[in-house]
Length: 119
Image (cartoon, helix red, strand yellow):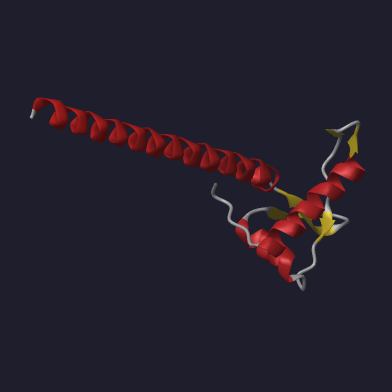
């Protein structure tokens, strides 16, 4: 995931995406992309533009506007995918450790039995 955001930036991006879905979609399908007013005094908006989640565009009659980039749209999907992958790795590691513990216990029992009956 190339886009790294802090919690306030995530909240702002989520708010913009939710607003766009609520106002620019029909039956869950995005019909058109929203354009938000460019506010250079808004720190969060500036940070999101610098990170690449938002982009500025200059339009003739409206001046400079802000739109959500493809990285901005995919940020939460990528974050969820990375979390699922992390959980999968943790479960795999736990299974490997449990298998190693069982195998180690079996080796101790076999060694004990061999030492008891062979000697």
